[in-house]
Image (cartoon, rainbow, N blue to C red):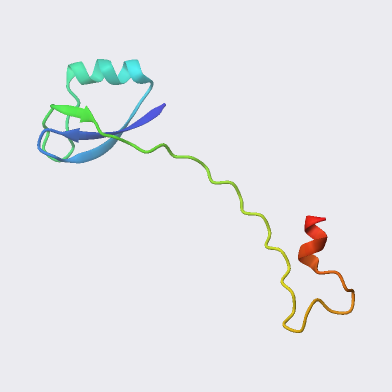
Length: 81
């Protein structure tokens, strides 16, 4: 299944699902009706791909205002080493 953003000749925008690209071509020749006005002069609109975002890494621990404590080793430096 593929989702296409479509525009009719009147400027209405809508989305419709198709089995594949050939299914879109077949239905376009038969006339895909616009849900707003019923017009069948419809074309694909430019779409941005939907890409899943990676999960963000856990933030590194911050140093306390007075320094890194008694260990002498900054937690940030330990991660880099």
